[in-house]
Length: 262
Ligand code: SAH
Image (cartoon, rainbow, N blue to C red; front, top):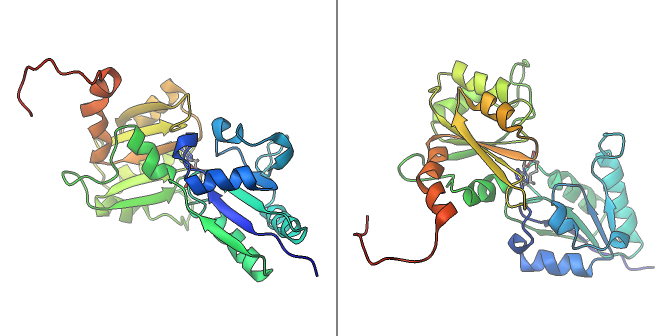
C-alpha cells in the first residue's frame, strides 16, 4: 500500500496575485505539481517554478488538452503520492469544469478539497467600477456563457428569458459571439440603449475596459480590439462606471476643505 496524495481544486481569482486567497497561495507554494491553463494570468503563473507546473490548457497547435487527459493526469499524480493543485482562473466551479473533475476524483477515490476563488464575472466588473447589483438598477444577476451559438435550435441559454428578467446579465467567454447574443437580446425586446461594458483581462497589469450600449458595443469591441479573456456586463449597472471613472483615475486622497457632502 502506498499513500495517495490530495488534489486541491483551487480558484486563483481574476489575476492579481493579491486577490488570491491565503489558502490558494499557500497551496501553490507547497504543491508538488500545479496543473493549470493560461487563465490564472501571467502574474500568478509567474509565481510557480516551471519544474512544478504542467500546462493543460491550449497546446501549441491551438487545440485544447482533452478533459479526459486532465482527469487521468490528476488521478495518476495523486496515486504517485503527490500533492496536486488544479489551478483555475476565478472560481473552479464557475464555467471551469471543476465539477467534472471533482466527480472524477470522487469516482476514483482520490482525496480532494475545493478552494473557492473570486470569480471574474463579479470581481472583474467590480474593479472596473461596476457593481453587478445596485438598488437603483437591479436586484438579480445572471451568469451565462457566450460560447453557445444563440441561433442554433437548442441554445442552452434562453436569451428571451434573460431579457425578460430585466436583471444584470454577465457573459463569460463572450467576445467572439457578441454580435449574435446582443442581437438575440434586441430581438427579445431589450432596449437598444441598455448600457454594456467589456472588461478585458480584469486585474491583470494590462486590463482594459470599453463601454457602449447594446446597439453600439460590437463596434466598440472592434475599434478597441477587445480580445478574450473578457467579461461582458449588460444592464443599467454598466453605466455606473461613468459616474466614478474620472474620480477613480484622479483620486488624490486630499480634501481642500471646500464643498458639501453630496
Ligand atoms: N472559472 C472562471 C471562468 C472560466 S470561463 C471564473 O470563475 O472567473 C473563461 C472566461 O472567464 C473568459 O472567457 C472570460 O469571460 C472570463 N474571465 C476569466 N478571467 C478573466 C479576467 N481576468 N478578465 C476578464 N475575463 C475573465
